[in-house]
Length: 298
Image (cartoon, rainbow, N blue to C red; front, side, top):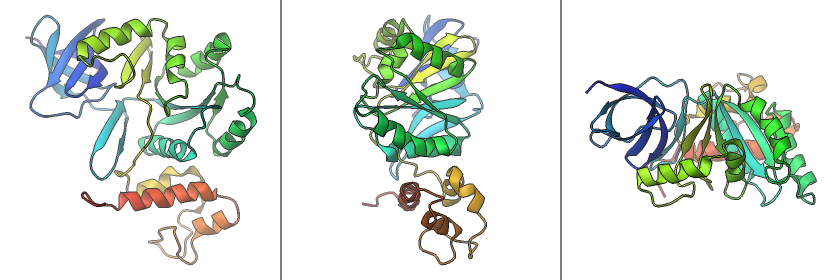
């Protein structure tokens, strides 16, 4: 049969849902290949009325994934922006926020932070203060309440999402599902169809899935995460992914400086002066340590 072009809108195991001209196709890959991601543009060959085999992944403009020394977890491809969803309650992890921002920087994807549940007033000042660190680094922070002020939340989000391919990332409990329901009113119907087609038996977010808002706008929902490894980033990639390091790179006494405890390190000196957050520098040191671990290391 004639090959067709499609976009992957969901992935679970070795089963993928490709959308082509408004129709969903349940696809598999040949052999044991599992490097297809939600958002990928693919070429597939139909094998029946609604099934096919993926033959080729078209070149990606961007690719987001996380990894440790054992395996990689594909998140999405061909993104233009990432939105990290945090909330006033429950508390969010600054470590995970930094890791997601670093992943976006390394992948060349614009990043925003969404502070949800602003109607919970008691913890709101503390949450705003914690996010001020990222705002000062140039990451836009948007405050909203998806459930209590849905109209205002929509007015905030729609201009940001227009003509973009956006992924929502966040820990469990931050309110991503409420945001998706707000942005995609028929999301529950789509979830049921996708779950049935991929045979997951679950309607919760156990896999990454893409929703088209219009021809030029899409939003990708992802499972809540509690860890975000970046084992695939080299030391050089890591240091360039910290925006605040940029003015100081190349100014260390030693050209092979690791920005840890070396004398004459411009980065650690900036930390001592308060120009770089000590907590962010700690994240860098931890990620550098993780990137050096070899498979099988415990």
